[in-house]
Length: 335
Image 1 (cartoon, rainbow, N blue to C red):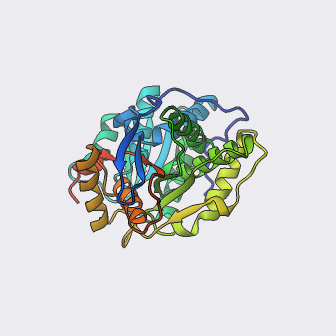
Image 2: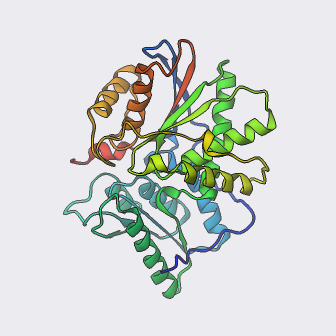
């Protein structure tokens, strides 16, 4: 069944949902002697915070441009993206429908509890969290039903990972570089957690735009730590999405798969399955900077950073920026 969410218009609109810029904090030295910096995108403010607020500023701008009367999106049972979409819907007075994996629990916890608090309608599918194809099919079906019922839904895929949503992280790339300049250092790498690819594509678009504008400027590598099965095979998808984002930004420069670095060695056995490395990274971060990581995303991403450092992938006195993407509510869910 076709997804009948409304197509974006030619202009790009942005609405204010996040508290920006988020802080860039010093994290001291890593084992290698490299300098750690933590970009606090867990502090974006909207609905407990997290990286999805940046995407939603543009996705919801698109929704308002299209005169949407409600929002629809999809994700895992404890999806941060779904929770933040619900918060955006509450802020904008747009009823929000969330298509979720799993069955309805006896008592809502974590992101589901918050989503319901924000007024969203939760549609539990009984599907596995890794079954992205069928979850997306359920989103398309619900979107169709809403259209047939006379509504104008703005339907958003998993993670908000569209070219429009990715603009949020093209802008974030510029924000990070500007903060590095203020701190008088040059970032050698930006490390973050990647799954649906939108954050990754946006950062790559920002990198390519900056490189085109100043070919002589030293710019960081973009290193995604993959946490979902199949993500290691999605470099072509990230490059395609980044190029679509660059086209929306009216940039002529394009990326290739050579710019895309995805390391899926820290995912463990599956998406959302805890790992010892992630647990260790959680304690390390809490003790070092009182940074609170979640077991599904940020802890695995940070375990990847620590793992790469232990493998001597970073050199002494280099500067490594870790983007903390949020996920706090999942800490309060029984696993």
